Image (cartoon, rainbow, N blue to C red; front, side, top):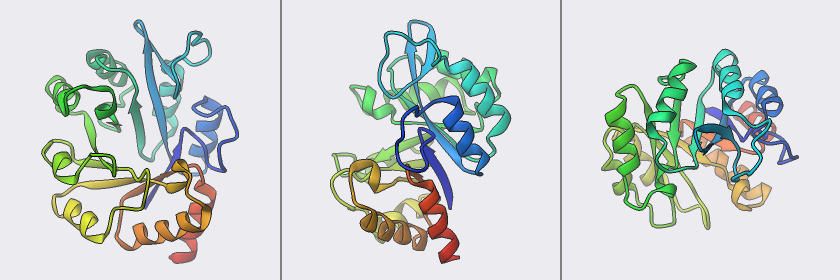
Length: 222
């Protein structure tokens, strides 16, 4: 199972997330990372929230460092609608087009699938994940995007996904990356129990703020 450090966090959320220093610290521990990509005009930057001042948040040096250092999955959360050619050119410039995957396009579009279809038309190399969650994002809808070979599985309000759900996605030849429950406020005991279920069901990866704890659980269960 792959571990993705959520915005570079791995021992909770101490601040400075999405920073090169925090991302690099996670990569040195052997994990993949998840980052948030935004645009201000034609300038890409890395931040969960929109910023007026993007000084120190430019995407280029961060992506260059990730391209050179990260050998585990790199998940890029798309936060702005419509910068599809620019995003592809940006990733291509750092040879990340076939190494990273893009996700959460559904959260910035008005019509389901338009972003993923546009990105796919622009590049047949791009890796895309479709969302499934307990907020009106069903499995079958995600599977309708047959070129999205990855699934971003989110559990906002309950641990809704069961073994049948996971098996259905796996039988459709999808890789599954699950969002860990602490990101949505679940307590530690609940989260650890859920990790063990995901491990049993052979989920491909988990995105977490608690990567140190998750790593220990995986080592104990091996």
